[in-house]
Length: 543
Image (cartoon, rainbow, N blue to C red; front, top):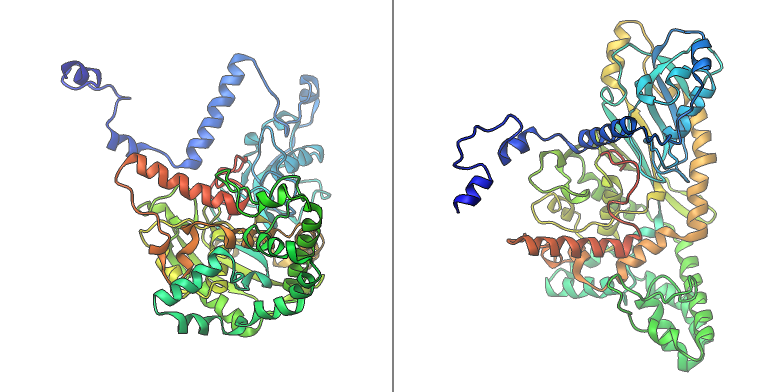
């Protein structure tokens, strides 16, 4: 015992060194995640430079010493670069030494245009490069801002705009709030198929909790939807399917949504645990496998066509708006991000507004809804999880008060909606603009470029979102995965409430690890991507 106390410095005569501190003191001194990551990158860069093993980042441009010395020195000014981009094919906004990112494309372009000196061409920090809002892999932005020092006497350098600011300007620190848009097909608000796992559980809990009348009232607009689809689209296909394989086709499609065995050369019913769901194993070894697959593909195509032709009534849109209204204000969003606990103060975020456009648009036969959220700041995956939860509330006929309950201490696993539909609309600088207006300077405002931005959104962002859904059906796939996940993880949207699915607060480290592992497995099974995917953007912004 004496040796153990001495090992930890207890009971010894030596005084505590400056760098030695207790756990409480260490936690008080610890920096936030963003600062730690940036410090780690800086330490890594220094070690590489000191060792002489220099690996050039993909965004760096190197010039000879002679070229640098011969370049004419020109004055630099702090500027705000207003830009928009399609995130498809990029690993987020932030610079990465290995991955293709938006800043990684922008910085060398500014070097090539002569806006950054050759002496600073390999290191963005020398130009004080800061982004206003980080975006995740594949996420778009109609308006974002980068601030840095540029040589701006060349009038040909333009993004949306390059605007001179004061020396202390930082687009990240001076941004008041951000506006994001999420595009969602209206068929995502249709109820789960009554024969799926969650479809059965919804009815079961409504009866058990005596909530059937309220549930039916919340699903009034879609009460006969699946009966009508079955009669119009599915029944004719099944009637043409041989009787001895008809049951396999029907059950396979309901229980093993949404992949068809053979689409990717492996059985669709392989769950996250590695076990096979019936009847995928049966189909895989069936002597009439090809005939079954052909019928299944016909059924899937029929379901897709039925959902494409759905047109949402105003009453159902109002239900979605009622759910979105629950997010407005300062709430604890720890259930809507990763690696946060209920007591973490940083999980509290302020949402100014969350609105669905009451006028849907129809593109290629599919009806789309535009959701816009205005908030001071957002955590990783927060917006996608907010959209997913609101959609689940409506489609499952759940009381929208469940969203208020999700801000409480009970941990639940909320899947994140597909990143395809998310884009950064614009950052907002109201406080900064009021100050510069008094000095007679121009505000930082995207309104002057509204026509150009809208044309860019239609051509480069919206069109890609619509085409991707038309080709690969990520929204259809996402919600079908949730509906068919055969465990209790997502039953908080039933009349049973959060107790039907919540993860009990663990009392032992092992139980906590198992609970978190169970949550991660459930989310990974329906999302098709990791919760904390290894991408260059490790900051809080990203939606």
